[in-house]
Image 1 (cartoon, rainbow, N blue to C red):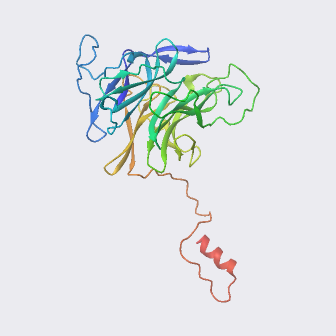
Image 2 (image 1 turned 30 degrees about the vertical axis):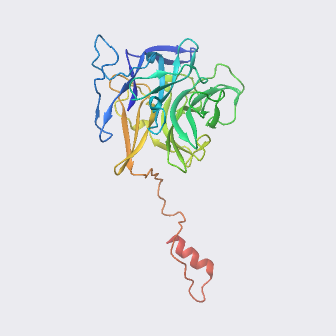
Image 3 (image 1 turned 135 degrees about the vertical axis):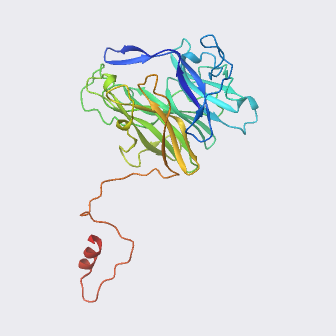
Length: 337
């Protein structure tokens, strides 16, 4: 597992005077697990922190300027130094842009000489699908609305170095504008946060994305984020099989430091034994936030709805119409039970 750690506590800052945000000096850290529940942080001896090399920080130049990271492992790559591939949102003086890096072991990373290789994007997912590398995140595009709004977007590459200069929109929860343009409107609608973490299942791509529930004031302290489910058959265009379904509800999270909990999903979903596991964290966290895991029975991302015994129900057994009885009467009797 690779995850973002903070070198110091998050410092609150105000964005456009409308919402409380924050920033921190990040570092990319590494951990290992045999079961997906208990994790060990090895002492890598690669980066000095607080005067010591006894930590699990990976060697990534400018890593403290990185605020989103996704990693892909391709052991079949003919170039051994490119078996591990990273895409990250990094600011090295040109604003937040997409950078990429390569590694032979996932611990010591070599940034691409062509960086930055892509536009602004806060990403949560990465896959290789039908021969193309796809990075999925959110983009705050105004071209699709008369106001800024976070939408799911993807950039695509054939070689992991040359990327599409413009992101393709994969899903949008904002809907049509219902009010006049206000350039100060921000953070107050139903949007998509960080795009989707991606799981390539062959004939379908499973995505877990952030359901951003904005607040009328635009204050990000009052924003809630559940984790929703989206599917794709090309890795770029997504849809919700159950619109609005909360795959992981934020309200059920213990130890959330804010009155309104909000979640983020990382690029981590897999089958382990008889379980399907998803790793995620709190969006607004503290020292005890950590990485969390949700579990289901293997490949059983179930959804329950209220049972109404007075609703009509489909049956699988044949309907036998007694002699002399109207068909409509028999069908009604069978269907209602």
